[in-house]
Length: 190
Ligand SMILES: [Zn+2]
Image 1 (cartoon, rainbow, N blue to C red):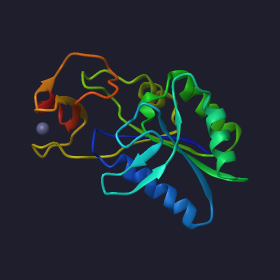
Image 2: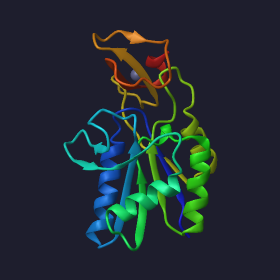
Image 3: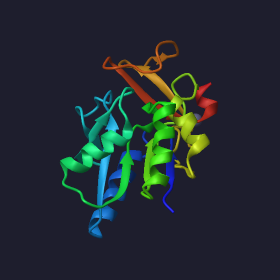
Image 4: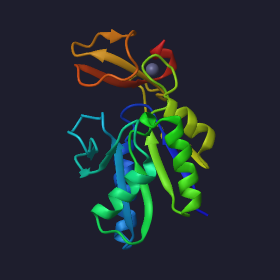
């Protein structure tokens, strides 16, 4: 039985790298996958999933108003995929709760795994709606570990200005702008 998966981690844990590796593993065995990412992720231009190790691939984008079932169907048509083996979604924290519910239903209705990769909490330690719903509904949940600059496990995400100043106020989602994020352990975060 196919599942909805959630792989979450702090910033720079290698989520996109893991996603691209999973895509490669399927395709190496002759199975087709589709890749989706959030429209507002402009780190590498719209519609790219890029690993910090240097790999990148095109992806169909989604925004809050989309039906994910329709985006999957669109991605499948675009690549002439008759039989889909897996759906891989990057920046899954930007899914709405309703979209996560739709994906959960879809994975079970079509018996096709959906693997979501994303952050759990924002720069103020609040849940992203998509992540919160994934933590409730995903059939398989795993934390990907990464390390804080102090050596402890990083589980929080801090926002910094371009000149390295910590930013504690502002909107949850910033499009553009000169901000950076770093994964920190709770001790360093607070
Ligand atoms: Zn730390």
